Length: 260
Image 1 (cartoon, rainbow, N blue to C red):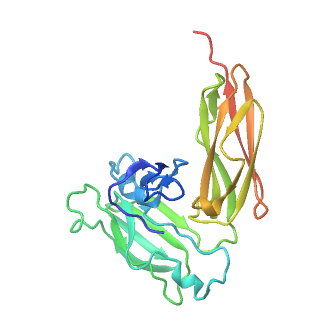
Image 2: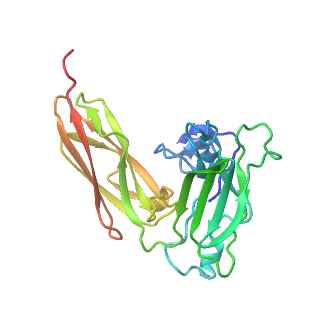
Image 3: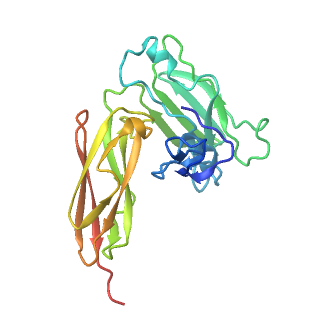
């Protein structure tokens, strides 16, 4: 999956327009779960690199779950190809496939002269002897400031569940998002999965969203929200499980606001 730097709305939204997919307008930089899409890499990189260095691929590194998904050439055809975009505010990005140094990717100022931090473009076609392990090293001058790694196999993929907030207020209104999906051994979310995830909640909270989600319909990651119960404080445990991966849990605490 590759990104597109064209104009977009902030998030996908419900729509009955003819161009909508299953009732959802999909022009957002983030999906309906507020998970950012690959195309958001261009926007995320437009910050001062001395505040936050960014090396953000505008694609997913997404080998097939089944080795035979594309026939005998499956390991060669799923990569983003000859013009893979990387959103970055670094001076250069050193790109590696396994042990092979692919190239030094520089911001493409000729194509994007009006961007303060243009994306870099790199050829990520796999050669016959390449390991499909991607590493992106971002540099400011000669200082290494960012390293991103992406696994080329799924043998160590795991189910992950991540809460945006550790504490919410026990007022029956406050809530936090929990993102779940399949991640590689470096913690990077995959762009696709056929896994069905089931979610359960214990404690003084309400699960807002579907308790069972087919990730094949959600782009590899999805989310639910946990809302507090008025006047009931304590830990809220959400557990995600799947027949293909070990279950995982995350805890959010609900706390009563102290009297002022």
